[in-house]
Length: 76
Image (tube, rainbow, N blue to C red; front, side):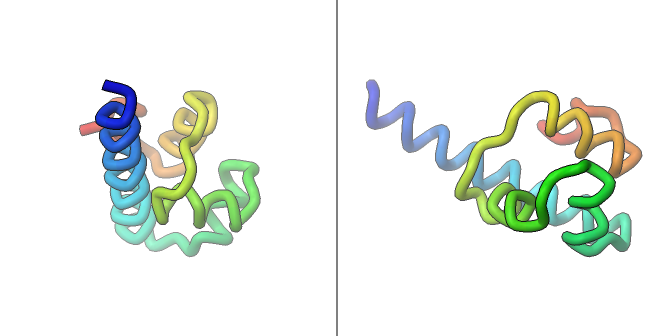
């Protein structure tokens, strides 16, 4: 189960990143602008969007607020 769960985590991370990119572009924000609003580095936001890193719940909450959406929309 370990390897299967890890593969599933990678898929979730990738899909989450794609959702952030979609929402950021719909909000007409650059990576730099969104990163500034969320108080994270542009390189960290880039890693989230590319699906190469997980993020914390608190960062997800700040992303949702900066994108003017409810946090649950990030996971739909």
